[in-house]
Amino acid sequence: MPRGVTKRRPQTLARLLDAALEAFAANGFGGTRIEDVCERAGYTRGAFYSNFASKEELFFALFDRHAARVLERFERQAAALGDGGETTIEGIVGALAEIDDDERVWYLVTTEFTLSAIRDPGAAARLAEHDARLRAAGVRLLGELLERAGLRLREGVDLESLVRMLIAMREGALAQSYVEPGVLPAGMLERRFLPALLGAVTEVGA
Image: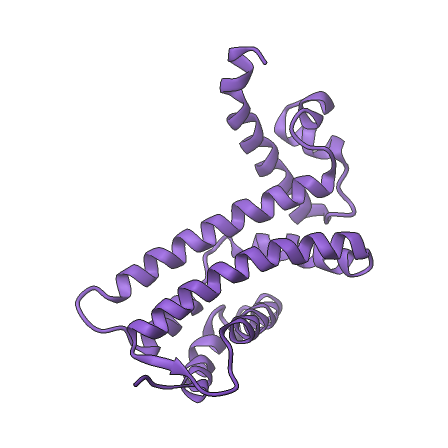
């Protein structure tokens, strides 16, 4: 590949991903054509297919980019919890309940894709693989935070299942917040109920 093309590839990828995020959020995954993404990005179909094999592959590239950003933010928050004091359940909840302003756009995109994947076993399997990688990172980070707080899970509770429950609660709470933003600001339910949940499934370590 010519040197100039190699240097431009990250910029091309970023513009295609940004354009796809906008198009998927505005028109839905199913309602967006590859041509729509190319038009928003200012590229030809050739530029698209030199980077992605399909629209689905483009979505998973978006998924991985968003996951990396979420994990980076949570890792920063987790590191900050130990600054100037001990890690507490309240501090952990604060990190889990923080919602970025751009989360609404991603919620629109990923929720619709999830619904379409449920109807397509192949897409569901690929989505499950990406979910599992993100969840594994969440398990690691939450485990580290609980250990720093001097807590361990009660018998019969495992971190994998707890993280799944936290994700389910977050996604369900976000759905209600985005439908009724004036009544239920994003993060309110998590801040109200996560302390009780974490308190119920943990105990002071030996």
